[in-house]
Structures are given as C-alpha cells and as structure tokens.
Length: 285
Ligand SMILES: [Zn+2]
Image 1 (tube, rainbow, N blue to C red):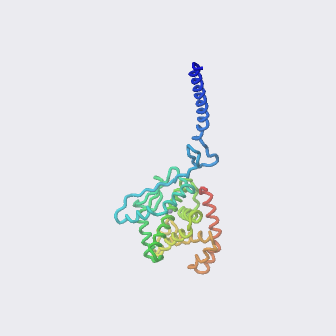
Image 2 (image 1 turned 135 degrees about the horizontal axis):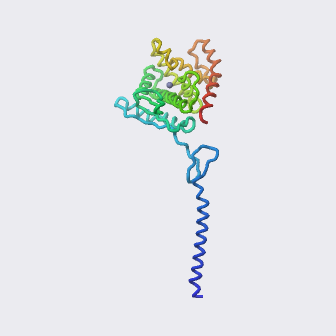
Image 3 (image 1 turned 135 degrees about the vertical axis):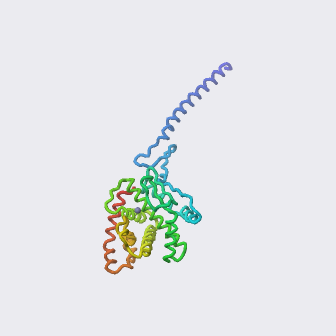
C-alpha cells in the first residue's frame, strides 16, 4: 500500500494535468473569437473584446488659433458654447466625414469652406461682430438673449459651411445657387434634428434682416454675388420654418403686405416638403 502511494499520487496529478489541458483548450476556443465579433448588418463600430456597440466617434475636429487680447473673450465664448457639441453629435450620424473635417476658429478670412485643405474657417471677428449687431439693433432686452442669438447664428453659419463641405465630399449635384442650397441644408438640419431648431433658424434669419438694415443701396456687386440678397436669405429661412409647421407660425409673415403674406402661406408648405425631402435623401439616417 505504502509503496503504491507515490504512484497513485503521480496518477492523480497526471489526471489534473490532462483535465487542465482540456479546459484550457476549450477556454481558448470559446474566447478566441470574442475579438472578431461582427456587428452584422450595421456599420457601427464594435468593441473588440466584448462585442458591445460603441458610440460612433465625431468626424469633425475643432481647432482654436491663438487670439489677441481683444478677441480673448470671443474665443472663450465659442469654446464654452454648446454649439460645438451639437456639431459633434451631428457629425456622428447626419454628416459623417472621412477623413474628419477640420473646423478652425480664429482665421483671418471667412466664414468659408476651403476644399483644398478640407477645412472650415470662422474668424473670431465674425462672432464678435454678430454679437455687436444683435446688441446694437436692440432686438433683445438682455445680454443673455444676445448671447443666445449669437450662438444660434454661429450654429447656422457652421452648418452652412458644413453644407459646402458635404456637397463636395459626397459629390452632390448642384442645380441652382449652391449658397441657397447650403442655407437650406442648415435650416433643414435645425428643423429636423435640433431641439428649439425653429427658434435657432429664426434668430439666424434675423441676422440677415439686420445686415439688410445696414445696406443703404444695392449695386452691381450685390446682384452678381454668389449669395442671394440678405433679405432674400431671411425670407427663405422663414418660409422653411413656416412650411415645417404652418399652425405654429401663423404670424411669421405679419410684417409683409397682405398679398405677399397670402402668397407665402400658400407656397411655403410645399416648398418645405420639396426641400426637406431633397436634403433628407442625401443626409445619413
Ligand atoms: Zn456659403
């Protein structure tokens, strides 16, 4: 008996080795494929280890160029603005850029989209002048409202420039003035995707109306411009807002003479439907 003990012990150890080996092989087989999990049927990225669906990454990059003392406050205003988060979220689902689109604040020229460098440029001066214009014209009672309107106009402007980038990126056919098309791109996104997007669209339309007030007379440069006149851009945005919800915006054309008011109310719901369907066709779901 005694002499058998070591042998028995050896035998039981051998059994443990075999069992361990079998379990190790089984464990390897079941876990080795975890890293190759496919999320079949969607383009959503999947975490390598656990097969979880991850939030898609933003496809825009923000860059802030150094500001001078006069523009320091404007730079901070933009950096802290919720507008950046809104654009990031839209770039995860509605307009997805690969490679990512660069949005540069503090450039000398702009607002503009530069297709060569795939970047949008927004000067600090543009944001600070927008704020001053809202303040000067007395449209709002408080600085808080002025700041809100400035953020709204900045969001519309960014979406307008992103519209240029999106048209270039997707090679979307342009049948008419591109500038009008991207104003529509911005307004349609606001109306479909953004909480209080209608207010944001109206505030950004107001900026065009205020700029029109500063125009004493028109010259050839205004008529040959690639942009529609400020007041046309203003009424175009209002038309889309009204068309998206005629019951809610029955008073939106009150400043117009009766005949034009009637004409807009007749025309704008169909206009909204056409433009909305057109852009939703090209925007990602
Ligand atoms: Zn433009």
